[in-house]
Image (cartoon, rainbow, N blue to C red):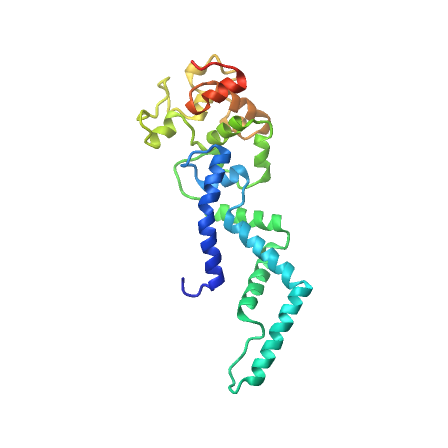
Length: 267
């Protein structure tokens, strides 16, 4: 236990530490994301509040509800009664706290959280999440669509028209961790030592495949100059992008989905 950390807070942190890998694994399974996908981006893509923020707000809400209720009043009255008995029995001048220290710490912690975030649980967790997002943005050369915008429920609208496989490939395209040569080479996947696309022009990324690859010229139905963000960050276009990437048959993971969803044989 770290010095100065209350026992209950330390226990709370240990529980969170044990639960975080479970949530991380579950999010990757639900979203169809690679293990290399940063959990920060995955939480934002699925609009899933970080576990510690969510649990802290649940705890604060419980404390507010408990200590503002008749039960809470009874608890504090009993604490005062115990304090009174201790004072009468005490033969020294030692100071006896007004409320049992553990309860007082809980009340102060909940009051501090309420003062900074308010009492609306959803708004409070989102506000705290956005604050963390802005202040802890990692320095990385890997820039993806998923790493740019702060958490918002509107992110879920990108998936409103999509089936599971389409939603998964959209998450992969937005995070950049997708089964194309650029990512697979960085992940040291055997057989993908070269990140270059088969067309030889650029590294094989979702953006290159969707917008620039000469091999896909005939399949491309949109004009030159279109932006990648137009396809992966605008709800009305995400189905077009997801379906087009699956139908490219470049990603082994989605070849079965291509046959089942669109009745197309793999070449």
